[in-house]
Image (cartoon, rainbow, N blue to C red; front, top):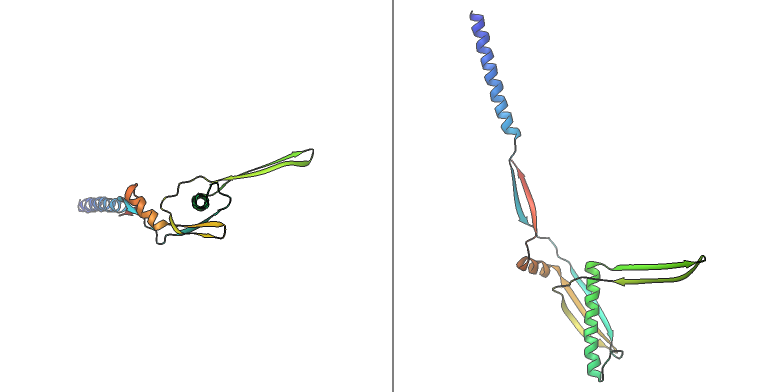
Length: 161
């Protein structure tokens, strides 16, 4: 009878120990997840530069001043086009035609489409018969503008515990 009590006592202790071990390990393996959105700020911001050119004498206008104003506008647009090529890339369409094993026609066309915001004119000047405009696009300024008016750029920080 004493042996049965000892065995019963030991089996109860064993069951209690296994139960406690199960509870402790279950709590240790179950993780809680906390997800926070955190603003991502780059360490460096690139500054892009572009130059646009326009011949003054080839512009339409009755006077030299009108041609100069047209060249100013054309060189600025050319610089913006160059910035758009840098930021968004350039689309190329090529075509080759072969007739009777001879190349009969070929052509290539390029285009760029994009929106450029925040570029500033660094210099605008004339050299001989060419008007030149230099633009600069500072991505730190673009980042600041975007965060003021648009949705915040977010990343996720996940913490397990």
